[in-house]
Image (cartoon, rainbow, N blue to C red; front, top):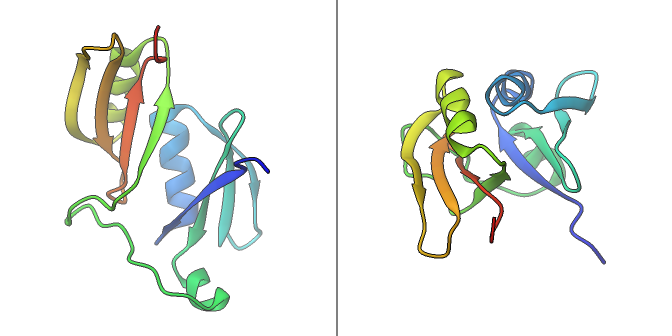
Length: 129
């Protein structure tokens, strides 16, 4: 078994995919014709977005993220060699600032933003690098 992908349920899949392209540099590699689902090209693990109503279609309920509420109990972590530049790009694209880049005791540079949906995103350097 391996970890294949993360799916985040959002109100507008197409707008979210476009936001992630602008804020984090990922490109769409697949989308359903109706934009109820899309996957981004992110490296080894796929990041996907599904329309909120898909939870009903699939037979379960979710608590959707909201930029006006506390962040949900999950974060997406994106690793980069230049955390400050990536952080600045994300904020310039409309991400909400949470924590500016800072050096940790274990040597990693870490920052946090929230995306347009209120999802917490960590932008960090590689661990040990």
